Image 1 (cartoon, rainbow, N blue to C red):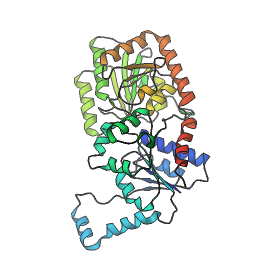
Image 2: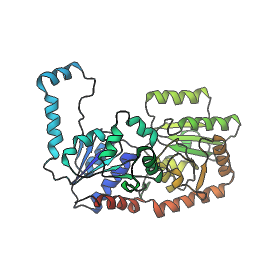
Image 3: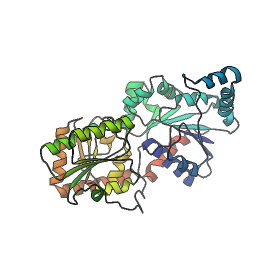
Image 4: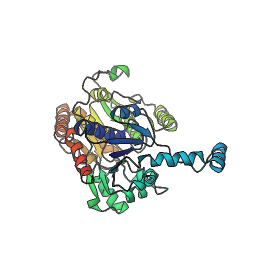
Amino acid sequence: MILFIGHEASRTGAPKVLYDLLSWLNTNKPEILMGLILRKGGERESDFSKILPTQVWKLPYPKKINLWQQIDNKFFDTFSKNQTKYIRQFEKQNIKLIFSNTCTNGKLLEQLSYLKCPIITYIHEMESVIRIFNENGEVTKNINLSSHIITPSKATKNNLIKNHGVESQKISVCYGAVDKDFGKNIAFEDIREKLNIPKDAFVVGACGTVDTRKGADLFLQLAYMFQKKALDNIYFVWAGAFHNSVDEYRFRNDAQLLGLKNQFFLGKYQNTASFYQNIDIFLSISREDPFPLVNLEAGFFEKPIICFQNSGGSEELVDENSGFVVPYLDLEIVMEKILFLKNNPTICIEMGKNLAQKIQQQFISTHTLPKIWEVIQNFLS
């Protein structure tokens, strides 16, 4: 049996990669026995459960515990007994390999170390996120326990080598991918009409969690720069959930104080295929991103991409034929490239088609998921 571990079941990139891999294995390798543990649940938990038996892990009490937990620990030890029983449930299941998705599962992997089997970790995170989760040594523990590591881009691999001393031969790069049927049979929603955006407007889109790492503040600044110079009929629309309620207040308040009339946050938006159909170009202006799946989705719908240099794996996808890679955080050049694409519709369309063709040839799930399976096979005894 292969035991898969996911950090959560949200509608974000890393859980999607795990879901796609499990779906592919379920279809193409039905003889492989699999189990799945999620450290946290989420809105896609039921989707995972339809593929294979799924459990949500019960971590030990945090350092700060309430009065009842203190009494239970001291006199009854109920939690510890149940936790031990829960952890040891895999003892007789002949687990040959653990596949851990993301770098944040160190504590859980340590608890499962009694299984004495190889561990493959798919590390999606770049350095700033790694540092957040590594304050208590969680990531270092995860790396040290891993027999092998998979990354979704060369940028992610190089970061592990440079900042964490991981040997190059211990890392395999397996790029992310989009499903060949992405957006098929999805009802089209006219977002422009919903937002009162003119049909002939040029719409600049972005997608993902609304936070500073993803560049949501830069998105607002760009909208303001265009509005300030009275460059009309260009709109900025972001599809994605806010990181938390504080961020939602902050970004929406900024937009209001700036008096923006050309910018919209859609919030959580599940029909992303329809979103891409409504935009003209895609901005991938994260300060740091391993290999954004939203780039592949936007490119799949023939949208050219503008991204930053030295911000992660985006420039491993985007080239001079499919968009623009601009100097890091240089919004003036981003603005220049947006205007170029707006004023040269033929080139804009051609770049989008080039990117879609590249994705069809290299970044479709049926091409990339077997490469992850090849790595897994090397560690199955």
